[in-house]
Length: 415
Image (cartoon, rainbow, N blue to C red; front, side, top):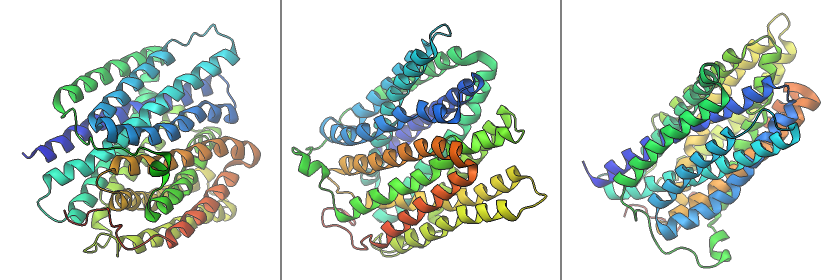
């Protein structure tokens, strides 16, 4: 086995473990505090620092990964997540409500930093490992590796949603966090022992202008990513779980639906290379595909709203979950194409910085979506959430219309 394939396998396995616990954390926090009587807006507020911290973590994480090596940043991300779990586990039921909320928000912020440091390091490692293992064209192997990595990660996140509900039911809030911290400690040890310590180390940008002065393709794709993930989290974070619970679903059923949705989304994402027509230069067919699938995705929330309006005699929760199944399939293909394009546009020497910049935009989108999920649901219910989603997806589609179809000069076509 070549070192590149070996390193890709190690990074993927480590990120699987991280994502499993990260998905479980989201369900633990959402379900535990919903049981405590928190409103939809307060529930969304609990996740705001988690998302906001990710914006800075992605930017600085990409720079640090370039300067100090991807392996070091992956270990920092795992260690930070363990610290976040331990801080959250220290929450006391006897504390005042305002102090408890502040404590949870702080702990979530630590976990948000951990998530995006780990994500940036892991996804940057794919380009490094692929270059080491290359035996065929860059595009074929890179698209397949990115799609499998991202899709399998999302399937693990879905499993994490189910795991969070199960752990909460079996062990309670505090013990569940301690169990997950112990599991991550084992993964951290494996990364330190098995990955090359200097993997991905290069000369980092020395000025802010260099750090933020990305290529046109990277900038446009980052803007599209803000709207793409904002459109998902507008309904995903608070709106749909609370709507389903209000329509008679149990916590187990809600967590199960979120898990199944995310797992199927991840599986479709992993299979995206078999659906998308490929081009010899890696952009000529892929960019038009991004435009087509973005336009199709923008239509799905509108179709769900229309179905809810005319579906007399049909349970609204069944209409919603069916429509969101269609949304998830189209969203998965969009996300896979975007995840490939960022590595295609990224420069070879500072791939981690470009990826970090892109996922900072991703975190900004999740932040906006998380806030709007609670605000819009409290204001206008699930219809308001879906309307906001449709508007953001139209903006995403507009961004893809301007994406360049030529590879930037500093991005390798086949080296």
